[in-house]
Length: 295
Length: 295
Figure 1 (cartoon, rainbow over the protein chains, first blue to last red):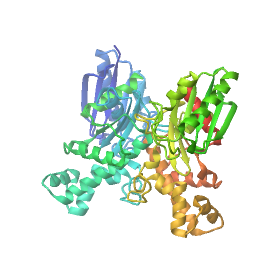
Figure 2 (figure 1 turned 135 degrees about the horizontal axis):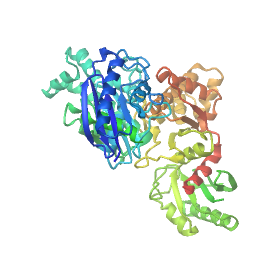
Figure 3 (figure 1 turned 30 degrees about the vertical axis):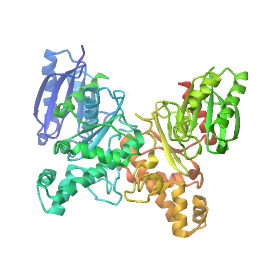
Figure 4 (figure 1 turned 180 degrees about the vertical axis):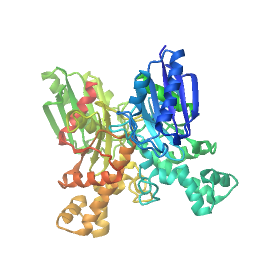
């Protein structure tokens, strides 16, 4: 049986795992990314971990999931806000040269989409649209078990979809972009603006759970805006399943139900859509990255 | 070489053609649909045309494109507004029984998408999103030459995508749906409401060409709204090419340029998207329908 290495290069932690063809993790190592050390030190960690694994397992390739923006085809990390100090780093070439294996790169949302579609909540579904509802909002589309990154790698960049034209402007995104009006960051900023509270989305969810109607309305608005995004993707593409992951999804048990009801209310009468929570949690990064190397 | 029959069942005309594997029309017959005759009379015309062609050509199958709603998998026409009197007509079964050939059915926008992707403006592109900008707005997605109708046949129903939440409500569509704020019908209704003119979208385009600034603004709004829809699909899917067909696209030579500029202004800096006009015109219906039978 083939084994490959999946690497989840996150802003907080670096996780490196040996994964088999069934998508199971054989063994895993991790370390804080500590991005202030710069790319060279972090790549040295990756290479050391890979070489350690190569002593024990026959390894056929390496897949890496990383925050974007990046050039997946060229294997180059551009300048991710979550990896300060990284600037046009030719990641796959440097790792490949050091460990003598083919190395593949994709952005973290696409990698999570691939993992959930092939080994998580999406097993058995023909087409899966994965959405991470977290600090930001991103996604990825997997058809017949194959990631569809799009013509220039922009598929899944749903955080920049306009769902409220002329709405809240945030970072470099469009006014009223999905991420600006529905993300965890957006919920936290509205909590500060409308209620004067610090503590981000978590504080808003806590207040809502105590019955605060304004906090509830902030969350309902975010759900409504995300529902527009999901319904619009359904009209464009009609995937067999949406999978929802990310930190905001963990905030309340009933969120998926509320979101599903709202999406259904926007669809045609009689039209339905399947939606599930992601099941792989923190493991999605290494499992999905490994899938890149199995192709 | 294989030959099949492609049928374009339109609200106005019924076109039946013999098409070869290269997507070329060998011979074609057409007649006014005259839908007041009812489905039986129209199906009799179809069967007669097919039998006439069977005497001359070896025919391997039949594909039919029809206005929706319909159940493509079951081969049943439901109750299209453009085919009054049709109500749950088991079209493929009735035709298949009569001519002893396999018969396939798809909605007209999907059929046009398939035609343009495989034989028209999309030749050589990996993934094509086709949009018909006409009285209504519809579309279809073709990946690697294969139509992607979606899990339940709703892919391409982009006329119901919400691009202006709380905006104009039209027919059974969502308030602010793409078709309600960007279609030829929408342009015509705004012309009537804002300028008091009859004559639909054509009258608004005529006024705009004479320099009327309000008419120009109505058209600019429609372009802006369609651009949001196209940009949103790009963020979700990033197709290699958009193809724009339909009557409104014929109204002005510069429409595609204006639309492309507007879409680009919504995309990320540095992100681009290819857009072309449809090239097959009225032939798309029979050519795309034939493709259904070649699979």
